[in-house]
Length: 266
Image (cartoon, rainbow, N blue to C red):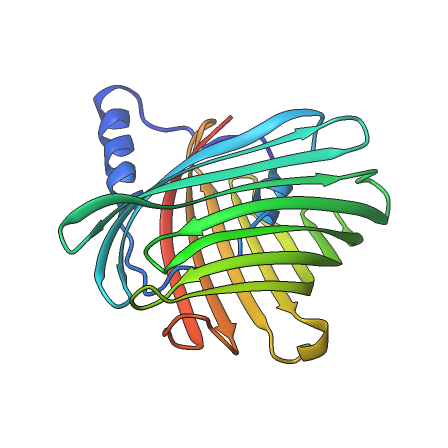
């Protein structure tokens, strides 16, 4: 799985890398996803030590305004002999109708204990904000059990189910704001398969809901194709579709994201 494609040498290699950079930074999206994909970085880490990537992408979003976005993310995982620790961070530079501002970011910390067992406990913390959507603060903490139901050489699968406490503060029109404090169930199921040593496909489904409104949920289906073009560089193409039965702000219940990105692996 650690083999890499061989690129042409000299000036042809330089031109190839430049072309890939421009392709990887171009994307068109329609809405910003609310759930973080913590499974992709986990699937990279199958040996003891540090793993991770630094990502860059460029997109044009359409909500109530036209938004040009440049995003930088840094994802790190550490595998000890028995446990896994994940740290995901992101910061976005956004231009809204010609005005530039730093408008969103997140910090996500997660620990999985005795990861090689069929059942393993997992705990997480997250802080997130998004001024473009009016999300001043989303803080959450939770935990649950991960069930590793499939372990093959080129195909793995897991199911996570747990609970979390979520605190949200939203700014609406004028000076109006909404504060939500919810206890929610959170579940996801993921499959990761290697098409070849350089190409990986990830499919993940998320489901979050309040216990008293279990069928009025926020559900997300995400697919991601990662292609490694060298030892340290990969291209990621993802499609995310989210259905929220009760969005806080005035956006459609069904939204989607189509995104390309360039990843620097380490």
